[in-house]
Image (tube, rainbow, N blue to C red; front, side, top):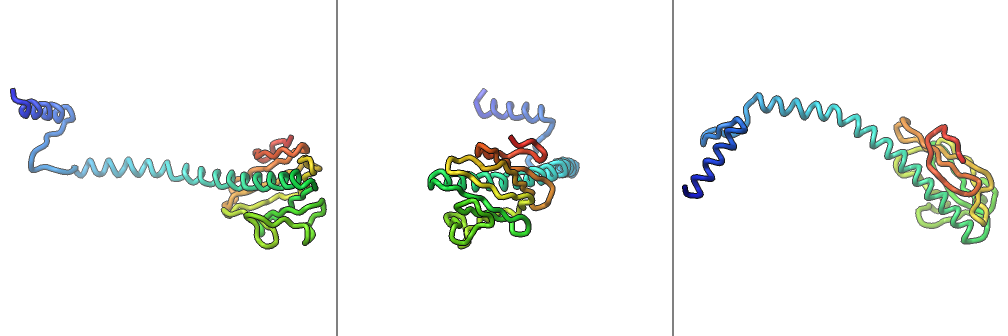
Length: 184
């Protein structure tokens, strides 16, 4: 049997297995198949959309908490490299911003404010994604990198459905924790 005929007979076996007969004049899907396809896509969308929104809000909150961790680590690094204490001053909603100053005086006196990458002319770092700082005490790092007192900053997402705490331990370690968890 020539190869072309063998291939054709294999194709008819495959189409018979699939339960469909392909004729030269019939192409496309039936209405029932389209309705089933639309129903399956609708069910998957109804399940997936709320899960995606929940995930994106959680990531927004986590991202804002990590931005604050990076900023506090920068203040700690400045204290160690410059050999002087640095304080992190934060402003809660509606400003949602943070800045550093050398020394332990908060609010920061004008001449001691750190201005660098990511700050405006007055030294303020802003939260970018609409998240809010809802609890923001002043935290001071010594020239050895330790915090003079433990502190907790709370971050909330823009839709106010989730919060995370950024905990600073007396040793200077900075961690993101769930709200209500005990800071070490």
